Length: 209
Ligand SMILES: Cc1cc2nc3c(=O)[nH]c(=O)nc-3n(C[C@H](O)[C@H](O)[C@H](O)COP(=O)(O)O)c2cc1C
Image: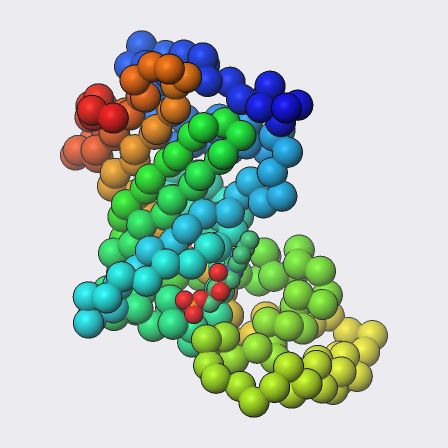
């Protein structure tokens, strides 16, 4: 039960101790998630809905969080991208099981500029860069072999060179208007604090668990 011992269910989480800035609060929880035995602490569920209003969800890795929003990267031709282009309202959800924490974020997305996408693309392992080029994300393909062969061809094409950013690949930034922090409490009532953006700042409210 070593894993369980790491659960800090008695961590105080209240209106008095929470950061007044939800971005800083999220950064703090992400740092704590980084220190827990999680394979992908930056993984979040991204929920979108296109013009048909059908909600869809999938995991993305949140690569950067700052005052401007939460950044993730994907293929601009993918299903999620098409839905976001038709309806930029989206939700991101983190769940950190070992910490009994959930963070729910709502807002609108915008594409990040190519410079930011290039900056991130350069940090990816070479194989991930090549995969981004060859994968027509979310489309039906005939076989895995098709992708593997395309990677091999591209490896030769870019031998000894940097792999450039594909024009159909890049980041989105979710600009948040609502955050909800959920902290599980052992044998007690769970804590839920919601931040709603107002003109210049944030209103903090407690929600019933
Ligand atoms: C742990 C994990 C991390 C992932 N990270 C990303 C990511 O950062 N970007 C991305 O486009 N897909 C990522 N995926 C794959 C997506 O969940 C999804 O399968 C893919 O983006 C296609 O989604 P779509 O058809 O709704 O556009 C990840 C999946 C998992 C399980």
